[in-house]
Image 1 (spheres, rainbow, N blue to C red):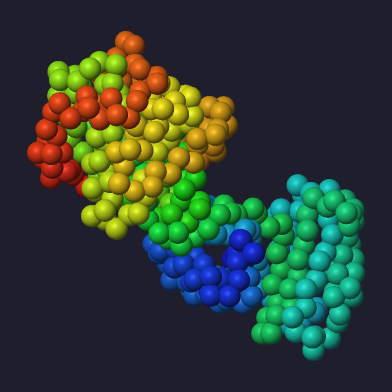
Image 2: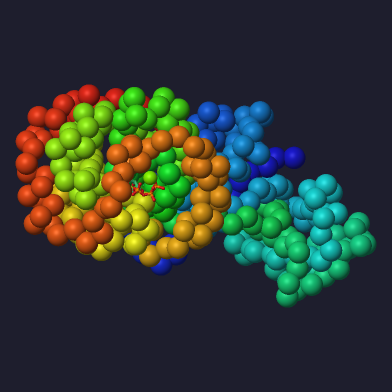
Length: 389
Ligand code: ATP
Ligand code: MG
């Protein structure tokens, strides 16, 4: 039996030129994500992409799992290919569901006929296939309103497809259709979720991580790599930049007012990340900040951070509760990694009494007591890059 995968586009509101840009990018992303599974060819029609594996060894399970994480896809399903002969279609229907049918109690059949020459009309196709299924699997009941299993039979120009329930796709827009952004990736719960959310809106990502050895360990760094890998399952390839941040943090500790430690640190992170982003063609920074979550995420503190950024800072979690963020972290399988107990550079020199209402002017003044230019350039030059995913 020959099998294929049917993939349905998301964001149906898109029209005209945008639509073909969306589809082309989606196809390219699918091709890249499945590249190591063997040769495949695609056929595009309206809002569906049909994927034909060319190799006998094509790993359907693996392909389906990966397709479920590609943005821009509304739904997807495996399907059996049948010749356009109704007796054969019926027989194949019975055979195709022989394994899976026992998990269902109710079903209905939907027929779609793009070939209007086909010998039977859609209602007749549905009725006859329904009858033959009932005959072979008498425990099934027909339920047209809320069935456990929807069998769809599509009569196309050259062949017919038979499929069961469609799986829900990852939604969103294909990665790359919204340009590129640099996510500030800590080892925490929030930033991987923020990265996932922006990738879902079509943003291609690179990631910047600030490491402060020996205050932070090798393990903290490998944790960030693991998290980036989990995000890359959705976002595609991510270049991860690891910035040596120790000297800057020690200088903040030694020469800045304690109440401003964190805000100044965050401002310097913005400057460095902005520089790396610009070099990589990224047009926005992404952080996992959420309003009021900690002292550096009050409105005033965020204003101080923004003041140092040379490009828009996207904060997809800004209005979310921690519980909701955790729910997404679990869904994308980053949570268990995020809670591994390694120090982040943010927690290295945490002030006892951070100022929760810092004024931009005063923070600037406090920061300007040090000439940072050379240190920042050194940090950028000392940055290591690793390609993930
Ligand atoms: P997270 O769970 O993402 O670590 P958080 O609640 O711990 O967030 P902060 O530590 O204040 O909050 O960091 C806020 C944001 O700043 C993070 O979401 C991340 O985008 C960025 N950030 C913090 N630390 C680092 C770091 N070491 N490297 C890169 N980005 C960082
Ligand atoms: Mg953190």
